[in-house]
Picture 1: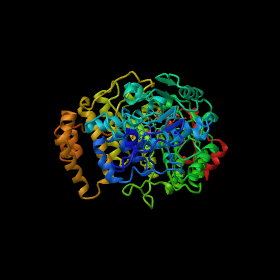
Picture 2 (picture 1 turned 60 degrees about the vertical axis):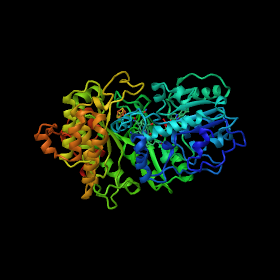
Picture 3 (picture 1 turned 30 degrees about the vertical axis):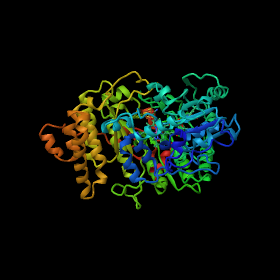
Picture 4 (picture 1 turned 45 degrees about the vertical axis):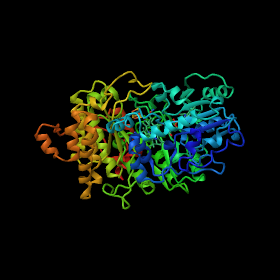
Length: 604
Ligand code: B12
Ligand code: SF4
């Protein structure tokens, strides 16, 4: 039995017959993605968990989501839904090839479509080897930095393709935001990959590559293809995507040095096309929609007369309103954004909350003031609380505010968000190149300040990963958890301790964590993560109180921050930016004379 067949038979008995090769000889181009990146139910969190948990913890996922492997098919056996990346490759190819030459299928169905006629198997992947930030760090804490659940399933997919009896007839082309991981680890042979494409499928160079592969020509190992510069050149799916992902913007504009998506041109995509893709998802049975973006707040304000960091409130409210009011859209989930817009335009946050909360599938019973306890949880980069470090790696992260005020922007923005039932997941980077103890203490101070003010975000610390092509590509920070200093461990463990707060309202919750984390430490983690891990873990487990650990000098006690209010932050803006402020948010600088229309609103 070939691995391809084994994969398709995972849930069937070993005595079942080996499937026949496809009767029609297979499709010329077969598109697929790892199962763990294609599944669509149970929300974003299952995929994020599978990116971070090591394969030996798969049982936890199986218990929580016993049906996670069950996927839906079209009548011909092709995939009912696929990640948006696969859908766009499909759409790009259909400009040149007939629909019965191209198919997108789940890994378990490859045997139905890969046959003697197949010339290309194209894989789209987000994170195949788990070497990206956040994903790598948690598996390494738990012991195997190389094998998160998602990575295991990605490798299984590549192994199945490698073992195909028709492997010599076709080329394997990989693309998607995680393709670089194969380039960097040079795993072409091991995974049986002929070519990795970095860039978008819409590019003419991508089509040229497929042409070559179909003709059986040798392919280069790595191809970098151009990103379309024009919003009209970006294609949209007209079939169903995983999680109903539809692109909203590309690029960002804040120019953080470690960031990959910011290398793409800043484009906000046309509303009509977004809406067509939303309707296509619904038509094909999707009930959920999520707009893919690095920063939802730039939409409607790209290349206008107003700087992109002053959100276009009316345009955003109009877009989201049309999406959530589309018949058939039952759930809507936010993807990424930045925090400064919450300080710039709190009324926008309020209006979006009124619109989006009713369709949010996320419930935080202990945090939300919504009658049904609904919440919004976009992903936001906090990265560091050290102004010195922020200046070095992300000097424009908080514009229009000065990066000197970054801690205040974070705290004030989070206050506005929390008041409106937004409880974001916020990423922090630990072990940046050149990070000093003082930088880590500054970040711990910010985290304590957040706690002191009763604010809440899921804090997701990850170890600095130099991402391919970024301006920090050649830099090196911490590479293994054993290298983390006691302060860096304290920061990581403090974040996780705070994340558990909303789950600790039962009498048994804290006890379970205490016993569980101590047991885990005794069993495995003590050896893996070194002595610097011990006191922070004791703090996390609650076995010794934080106050006592501080008194004993085992952890850093933190110091209160002097924080600017919104009024003070607004007052610190450059006078040329005042014209973009909205009077209904209040706090206008006293010297500012608003234009007539705004003045009228302000006095209402
Ligand atoms: C939606 C999203 C998610 C969703 C859903 C993902 C899904 N399976 O559909 C969720 C929340 C689950 C998620 C999780 C994670 N994500 Co994510 N996610 C995104 C986001 C916002 C949009 C992705 C998307 O669909 N874009 C639209 C499609 C059309 O773009 P695309 O996939 O890149 O496809 C284009 C090209 O890549 C190319 N292409 C794609 N496939 C192929 C294949 C071939 C053969 C060819 C030729 C071309 C090609 O053509 C397409 C355009 O035409 C991106 C940011 C972004 N703007 O891209 C981050 C992003 C991809 N995610 C990222 C990360 C780090 C993660 C996590 C590791 C986070 C974590 N620690 O949990 C996990 C990993 C999940 C996993 N399964 O392993 C990073 C990747 C960094 C990197 N380069 O490695 C990004 C770039 C975010 C960021 N700002 O850093 N993510
Ligand atoms: S704000 Fe986020 S998306 Fe924008 S450049 Fe910085 S890290 Fe990248």
